[in-house]
Image (cartoon, rainbow, N blue to C red; front, side):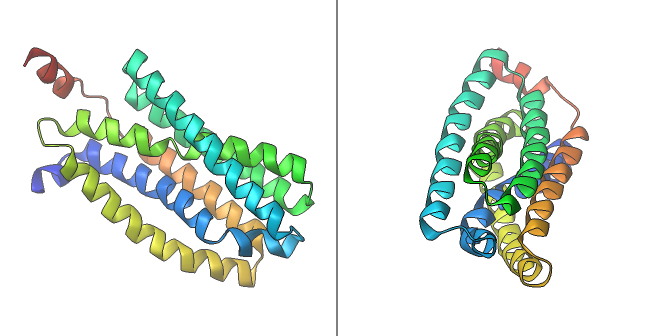
Length: 199
């Protein structure tokens, strides 16, 4: 385990994963408090949650195929983080309008960009930490991400109660921006990949 935390690239990637996975999980937990204040019905909120997950699954498949074909895990990670920050920012603008069509468009885009972080980071962790078995670095990432989600739920509810849902969406966008920032500190080291290919 010490070797993992000495690996700065892995640590920076773990922070990127922690922020985006936290957004994904947190959004599911506070979906109703997030949308009800703006007059959305329970049925509409259910549709919003469904399309978020559906397009997230599509994005996960696309991201996996991109990594398989290009072998550019770091670039894919940065694109996922940056696009997540942008699409979540757009959600902060559309949610208060109560225009379901615009909200669904931005929520679809956000799901497509945010949820693939799981596939991207699980794949990238294997490259960055080779020859350590992937179950350990992936398990540690999930542990920290779940802890971050626990904290973020209380922060999100507090922001919703005091400042409104819009600022919670701004928090999500800012968190995705931090995920992108951490991804820029990762220096691509092809040594693990070379070792794997030669073995």
